[in-house]
Amino acid sequence: MELPLFFITFSITLFVIGLTKATDPPCRTTCGSLQVKYPFGTAYGCGSPRFYPYITCASSGDQLLLTTHTGSYPVISISYAASTITIAPPSMSTCTSMHQSLNFGLDWASPFQLGPSTFILLSCPPPTSSLTMKGSPVCDSSSSYLCASIYTCPAVIGLGLPLFPPTNTCCVYAPANFNGKSELDLHMLKCLGYASVASLEDYPTDPSRWEYGVVLNYRSGAFDDFDVDNKCNTCESSGGVCGYAPPENSFTCLCSGGINTTTDCNGYSHDLGFTWGSVSAIRSWKIWLGILAGLIFIGAT
Image (cartoon, one colour):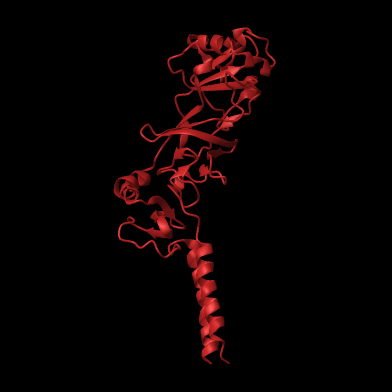
């Protein structure tokens, strides 16, 4: 039985379309207003596997997120030179908006640690000088002027406090510490909210001009450092994006047009339109190739 030529041609067309559709979405160099570079990535297979799934780009493409066991937090800035990111937890208070806060925490296995942020605990049981953790005082009395400053913000009424409340209901939590669950435990401290100050700028007593956010340090592993020094810089300079190929998570340079290489994007054609190196593309290729082989065999008999 011979199959019509148009049927075989149609099958080949479906094969190419199916392979193109099966490719993984390309890694991006930006997410919202932020530049995304190694070791961060915008999705699975992008950046370093140590940072996925902690750092991802929202499906809308307009917000880079840090996800931990306590929630997802918008990343508002990255310093690749200092190896820090700054996040803005939605329940964090600022001078313009104060409200009850949820616990904030990090995952033990993640490459992130608390950085040089200043946590100010709000609406705590007075006197906050008696607040302790494991028997040790947690409030820094030398920075009490920060409490006096932030309590001038009219937003304090959002925490059920009167205007210009007594400062002994505020605590500059320094150095900030987590509980056994790696969380800022507001329930244990009996405080309703917190503000985290990333920088006082040049206005130590003007909370309306402070930069709010939680600064986190991140640690690159030995393999990440090796890939940056020996592979990633070359890949990025050739227009590629650094990523990894599961399941071995070996280094991959992702180029425009869907080309994956182990070195860089120089000398590769970008006209193929699909990613030969992607897992889904290879799986789809094998399936379609088997179907085509069967159709050709039937057509030849």
